[in-house]
Amino acid sequence: MKKRIAIFPGSFDPITKGHESIVKRALPLFDEIIIGIGENIHKSYYFPLEKRKQWIKKVFKAESKIRVESYTGLTIEFAKKMKANYILRGLRTSADFEFEKAIAQNNKIMADEIETLFILPTPELSAVNSTIVRDIIRNGADASHLIPKGINLKD
Ligand code: ADP
Image (cartoon, rainbow, N blue to C red; front, side, top):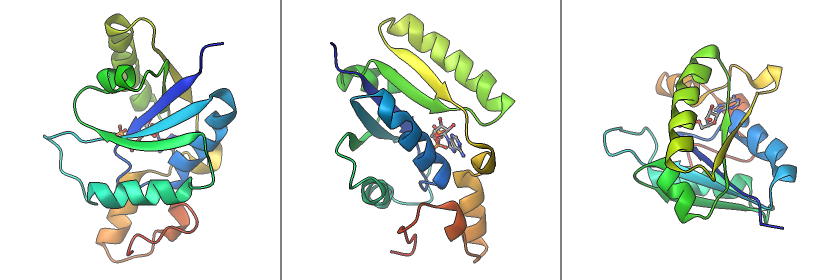
């Protein structure tokens, strides 16, 4: 059987318990999950790429099926380059749904062999996102309850 390879693309600025949960829940479905940190030249990030990568690697260091890569350009091109047959995304809100639907449908036109699959967050992680983590940190408060265990954003 063909290897089932998924990419999980995102900014991961920084990785949260929401990301961690999606990847862990998706793991039994795939032979390999490649976490792809997308670098958009028109976007600025709060944490440097190397830090974001290092934290993700640390979270999944015990998982041999998980790889971490970074990329520039279109996600669909990155998926092709990785020989992935699936793109994995989380769906938190109806706004996410509308946005993701347009991208997934266009990606399907550009690469018919690659399927986008969506996973809903568990209820307790529905409101967890990197924007909130950054807001908490910017204001000098503690966001450790929202990020994976063992990760120190001050590292
Ligand atoms: P992007 O800027 O591409 O949305 P993010 O790093 O914010 O990148 O998110 C990467 C993926 O993780 C997205 O598909 C997003 O929906 C998903 N995600 C983020 N937080 C959660 C969460 N709490 N529950 C489920 N999925 C999530």
